Length: 353
Image (cartoon, rainbow, N blue to C red; front, side):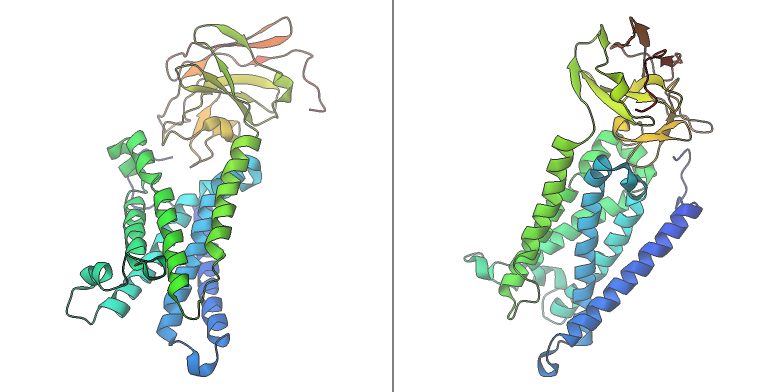
């Protein structure tokens, strides 16, 4: 969590994470160069520069698939949450790789003509008349521009300046960029003779990313019920809520509510919307007794919806009560940071749950 602007937010865990990440990146690039060079007969082997250019692109594409898969994987299995907390660092690392790939390709293929390299990208390759000759490099260039906007605004400073909703909308463009990358890869493979990339690779990537998002949407553990505002409603089967995780209830016309169960079998309810970047708190978990957003690790106290000092973020809280052995939620939101006691279903919680 950020309470002031600093150029880089690194703690010891993130430093270790980044070291391991970049060791893996360098190893992947080196392995790609070696394998690609050895798999082609010497007379047909591309130059070392081309091997490095392709290795950068391949490694970036693999990282992009991993980044897009982390979110749905974390919804399906809380064990992936540490990757989700550090996804921003992986995203910036990904951009550095594809930026190197893009600059390398720009000047290697377009830096020695009469036109400037960028104009040459959009005018010198292929035609729009047939798929087999469709210009694929401009698609990659536009995708790179989107990735640049995302990397340049990745810090919390820009989230505060642009506002969470605009910031989130901007970063949702990653799916537009992903579609452009798939077309860039598919058309490039179609036009290469012989093709270095099998034609089925973009399809497999789309099935992998799209399939995980669909599965996490329909088979995730979030229990979503729609209720009216301003009334007490029963929380369906609170015993089914696992310790340390939440259940999400959607109030018609308003934001969602996240109900959490602590390790002491106490229940509390806060807004589902993280103050940082509108992340879904109910899809996160409790760490050290604090509700932890699955996107970037922002934390809130369950009893009052406030972040622990020195941080000042606060979310709305909701009243809970027990009647006739049932847990009831008042769907009227209390002002952000309003304290209210946690409640417990006396003698109702099974130790086996």
